[in-house]
Length: 212
Image 1 (tube, rainbow, N blue to C red):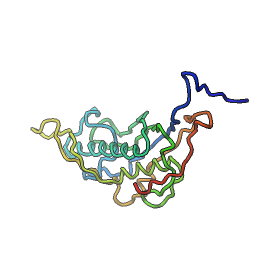
Image 2: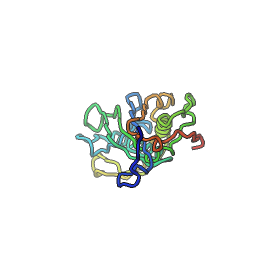
Image 3: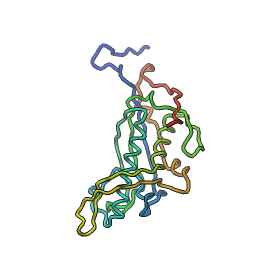
């Protein structure tokens, strides 16, 4: 039995072989104090909640979560273009003063061969051997980084209007143990998404990313 690829037809498979990964970040153990370390990680803005944040301090937590989500996307895009699908955010309720406890989403990388497999996690505890572990580590790096950006922040303060341009600083989501950030992130490849034919399947080339 042989497999014949329709290279000359409109359904040609001669294109970069993508790879799909599911991501789960359990954030109940991350900080949610009204400091630069609070806010966790979420794409949700103040307007997305049924009840908006009731104080500026709580609104800043939401903005920090957005900033970290942006940082995470930037970190993942270093090696290859990708798309995000099926985002599910879990909160105790749809009120803006409640912290996010879990987020799930799917990543589809356009050129999976560009995603490396070798290196060491940010806490130095684990040697990276797969693309899934690389993705896990890049997410952990984003959640353990400090960045300041000017953002449009919902401001419920009386007389301030609804939107203020504020410099928002997002720091590490945990300050005591970097390893717990890594452990909160679960990444798994969806192997059924890979191409069916061998010459379309990406290989796990040993690329190093330790200098990034």
